[in-house]
Length: 224
Length: 138
Image (cartoon, rainbow over all chains, first blue to last red; front, side, top):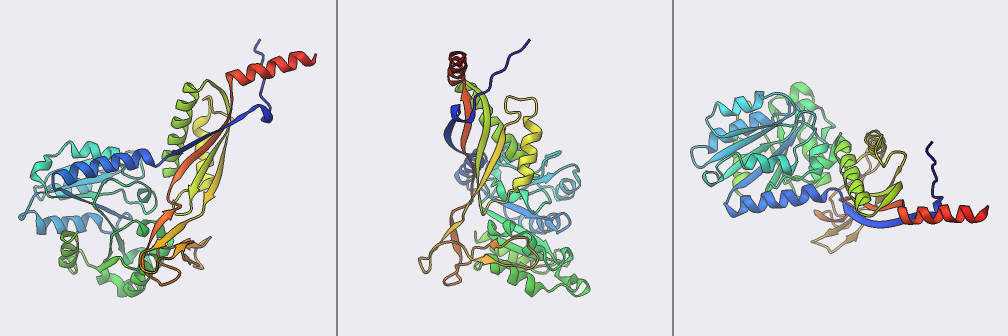
């Protein structure tokens, strides 16, 4: 027979802890950043919804930059390697980060991916985050900048529905502008929404399909 | 569902604390969530309940308080609550990074974190005391 006694509320202690739950990831992110900075490598975290055009944007940028200096791509994907294969066809180092059930990349996974590539031969790493507009915002990876890709096909309210994502970004790409008329979605209003959240952030309209705006994105990233 | 990652981090931290400090039972874990963090309290409680089942934290309560956001403007030196975007679509006001005073970009001073503030618990020592006092009453 098991006897149980329970402490009543006046017999319990409140122990102060002040333990940050985001700090463990933030610390690993700082370590990733220090490693990259030490070798002169810039990592760019590309975030956005599934189908917003993250992979196509990265493919376009890689196409443009790979002959000038070493570029690698980390593809975060919950299940498939479709995106990784697409980028690998350009003969640059690609690391697929399969999160399985995870809804975001974290600094630990990116740290592991960093050990898979020869950093000394690289200057730029694109990290394609999981297609999700909420969770990745809370987990810095050690990148120098975070880019959010939002496309007109996601509808007119994408920015105001997912404000958090934009608050932590340094660059916003409004993609698929060639479809804005067909979609009845105003590119100008999407840009205004971004600026209502974060007044001084650079927003570049693109069509990754036609190549419109890719020069501007390239220039903005190289200026970081 | 990054609430699950956060809930796991809470449980790991508390279990580690429990093993070090001779804690007999945990009654409540008090959590402070910043207004700028993107965590949903109800989902977090659900995840916590689900993963503490069959652990020493079973039946403990996750108490969540919100930490108000504070921002600072580099341009006009404003320091205080952020400007909110009251949008018809959203359930609540959205804190923005636009200075409520001059409209420039601001930086976040407070309200970006998620932290365990304290743990309400009974240690082995104080529970023995409570047993003694009950014996005395007879």
